[in-house]
Image (tube, rainbow, N blue to C red):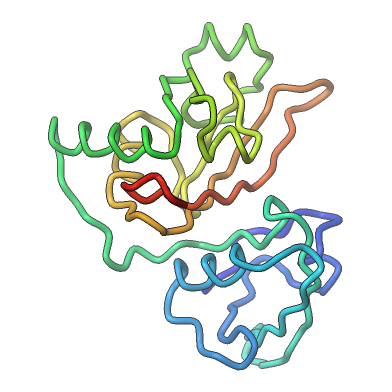
Length: 203
């Protein structure tokens, strides 16, 4: 899986991972796809060490990453294997249902909202309108007025993008959100990992 970005000061950066690296194995086991990688990392506790086999510019090498918090893990370009594709009202309703299970309601990031919250022009995404109390989103610190810029490495610029990105989520799956929060002098960016709750309410 291709590393789309490494946040400065995180364990991944300390281990020497760089944008464009390809992660081939975790602890000696081949990575099947991006979701497999995200699940393996998100299921581990802060402080655990994982060995990664990395391909960079034709050279294969290994690095050991000591994991920090789940919001500090590696950002990868998500593959689109097994995505469910549907359009129109059906896709919108499926997207809303999936987002509801995460505990997130979103709306467009309008120019008025952008100006009022202090987001610069280069921030794109959907604006969090509400976070359900007790949801996995609240547990991981997502707040009203945050902007979600990508889902599993897939850029989100409109409500249609958001619905398309979340409608195929399955219970128990780990989803990576790129979250931006208004702050001065510039917005704060972080990566949040959520596990989609099961229908019986057990995570």
